[in-house]
Length: 148
View (tube, helix red, strand yellow):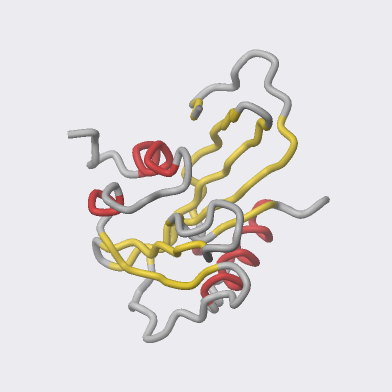
């Protein structure tokens, strides 16, 4: 479950960063490889924060590793901190946005993590097979989309 405020007895075992990379009204989504955790599901670039890593360093590293885009740290805007609880794990998620001045000609996917990418509007992304709580991350980030 996705929470805007820390739930009772919340014990995060990891911290995760994701970034919605936006060009005009389209946002970049990546599909996880079939043989990976949450395989064949779509998400924004991101991943686990490493031990003693600053959030700004983590989001820059993850976006670079997963897309090949070298975006300056100052271009990332933290959108919010949220809490996710699954039956066997609690984790915190830090959602970022970055607005691109031009659409990259090529996205270089991480060979071992993703097999496809696409640019879609946030509302259209709701039609993708998103990772669990991916829709809630979109709702928390883009105020112009809803369940309607």
